[in-house]
Image (cartoon, rainbow, N blue to C red; front, side, top):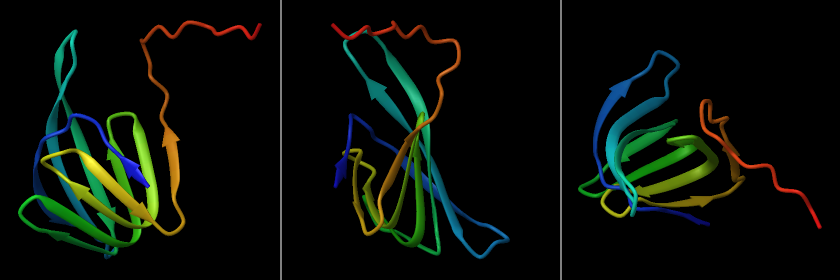
Length: 107
C-alpha cells in the first residue's frame, strides 16, 4: 500500500518509556492555493532512521497531519512523502475542527 503526497522533512528520534521509538519531523505541504508546514510522527517497536528512509517494524503508527496509519511495518520516504505499509494496515482520518466540509447528498 502506498500513501503519499508532497511531503518533505527532517526527522529527529526520541526514546519513549513504553519501549517504542518515536521519530518526529516537519514537512511543507505544497498546493496551488497555499504552502503550509505540518508535522509527522512515526512510532513503533523498532524505528531506523536512514538518509531518506524511516523504517518501522512492529506496532507502527505514522501520523501525517490529520491521518493516522497503523501497520505491522512502515517504510516512510521523508524526501518524497511516500509511505509503504505492510501487514495489518489501518488508516484513520482524524476530525478537522474549524474546516468547512460541504454535505454531499446522494442523487
